[in-house]
Length: 403
Ligand code: UN1
Image (cartoon, rainbow, N blue to C red; front, side, top):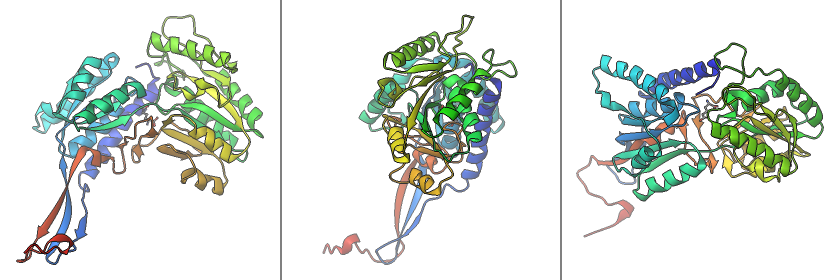
């Protein structure tokens, strides 16, 4: 899709990791045993397959995101029907061929992991089709809203992984030598096209100028070019439309009072290359509340931790968030009820680059879905609550006498 080779390899590793995880998980997909209120009875939970899991994945993670869904779906006894992004069909076909080989060697039917290549029309059919028991959708909030409604209308289950507008908060006690590489990786990695990309950098007023200076210095060293060339950190944007969105967002930011302090230009060469951009902004500028899927970083200043949390939470999206601090009081506040309202709440690491072991996903317009680790597997399963009477009496629940 245009990401640099080390990130592409990382993405394939993420698929390998979730497969390892799922193999172990398959032995511990356990339900609860619950005491009954009735003598001679017991309750237990059995997790059964849902059936067919539809997966609609996005261009930016054309391999790993399918992997997260497929590995959990398969160990749960389901089959998958996958539609990748129409612009990354080669990746979808390559993955499916590898999976097909594994299935054949294990005498499993190929239909266990089916692929369809197509656009929004196929996605629409998947959302409407009652045979697709669960539909996992990764993409924009705009499309995800429609997918969610369509699936809900037929009482299907959806897992939505939609837009993010992720912030890094840097407190005045932060270890700045961690902040700079973390920000560069999360804001420029995958050319700003991860849902977990850092789009907002919130700096305490005491360290604002120092961090800005260091981040700009780091940006000056970023090599832009062919994603396959060693040393390149920023490859092209995926489409011409994204280049236009980059230009529009910068123009809007400037019109709303923002100041471009690094980058801001489309490169005059073949391919959709743009300069990673840093813009001094303020939290009330409408553009900073939007997710623009390009490498633009909005920098904002704050005075107190509480103010920074408020800015973090002031957007409609709720995927990922990070604070850099050594203060344990702020650290625990950040994780608690008055802290970050996101699904991913990090400390002293960037907003992107989540491990598969935890549940991945976010709140509000991010859609509420959770994928990969923790108990995300339960979404691919049907819970059967089983009550077993092993006595020779028939007592009724709630002590009801029906005589
Ligand atoms: C995405 O951008 O849709 O946390 C997924 C990360 C990656 C996954 C991103 N592990 O940045």
